[in-house]
Length: 317
Image 1 (cartoon, rainbow, N blue to C red):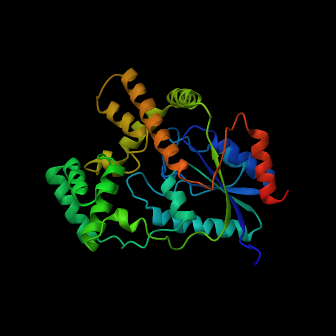
Image 2: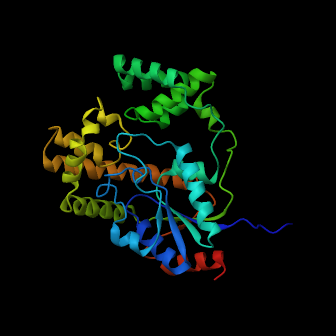
Image 3: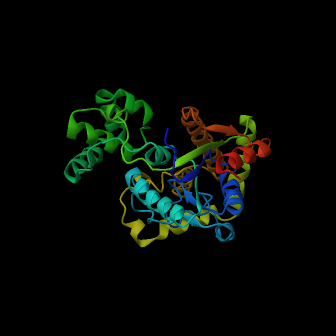
């Protein structure tokens, strides 16, 4: 059997607030690596505090890629991510460095490591038609329609996620075939690397819940609401008819902050809703991660030695 000569990479996965950033930076410093963000919120400029984006001090400790690629009123697809991340990984490997893919967006990891399903490209006319229907009937009705033509997709996509509802309906209308069937097809253009998949997750769910609450309170103390006020004040954002439909503003915490600043609920209720939404995100992330059968799981606080051994064995150091 021929030797596997593909460049090495580490895929550092895990639920939100599990310690991925600190671990990625430590690995990058130890192994002469560079970090490629695999996070759908970190691509947006201005989403810093609420997304736990690496700050200037953390970025100075290790090179980071795929941060601040889009303005918050723009969209960014998994296909765009796969292309951008692929170029970043190729460049890092070509310079003799170790790519460290770190984040919690499962769709991005899947697009990068398994390849994208060969679905049709976006069709502006079809998308415009779906958007017009949504404007008239509401996205909840569009989600219900999706449930009629693709129950599997509707069960996976939340009724408040217009971008994914629109894409699923678009694919069905273009091909007559549910997007859930397309997604079962073998991926194409997968990243040509040999990746060690590592999942960071506390063994006790209560520990993760406490970390989420502590981090959310720290975000509030560091000016998270002022950050959202600044986003709301951007002239381009003021031109958006339904800002809560934007992928950036739907990011966990930001939606709840936006609604609070719109006058929905008290400060205490906003905090509770933000923490609850973050816990629900972590739950969805863990569900996806359990499907990664070739990933190795570590508690970042208990299993440090075994995590270090796994990485050392993989890179041959």
